[in-house]
Length: 276
Image (cartoon, rainbow, N blue to C red; front, side):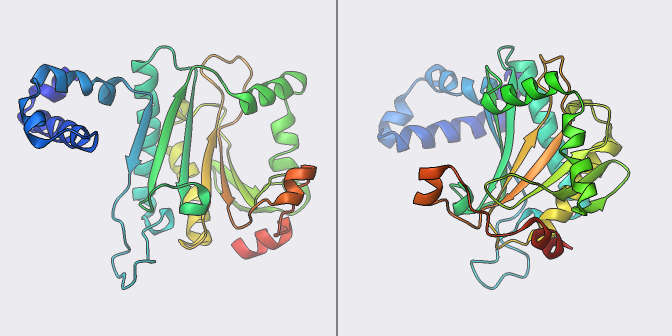
């Protein structure tokens, strides 16, 4: 914070953002101009010690776009750009852990297009720090405690025995997931490290290449969520780093809500074949 604000360009950047926020909160330009600098810098504290980060990627439209539907998606990045995009997310996660000692888990995700919950159509990732693991990680930890091999057994092994693995490299494996509410692709790291920040550059690039390939095959017109899962920093039970890409092409309705039986419109085999 001190380093950023000591640079005139950084200080101007922060003040411009604060001025904009104050105006959107209902203050006039005269009131904003008269507001003390100390007050504005106090409002800027959350920019440097917050628990919610947004990573904005590249351009809004594809370079050859003629229509406003030709949005620039993860699949439109080059492989190296996608690696840098993931690398930046991991570095940001490390920075949050370093800044906020109360953070126990950081949810990392990407919502692409409105049906997936995106508030803007521009490609971006989000990181949200939590002071608890959350119900999903709690349940997964209990499963690992009962069966340390459960992620192998019901992940890559299960998919491999049913011919649902469709891509693999030295560092990661991609397959169609089973038991999700939406058509889902799972990309598992092969590393012995169970947290993204513990992976080598080569291992991160291997994961990035498969995640990027899945987005490229999916295309920019399918709304989807990208969700990261890994071992919390304060857990002794190891879970692999894995990235799930969920196609949001179906909307749960009254039947699903009333029965908790969710109808997935795409079979695992059809999803595998479509991706291939």
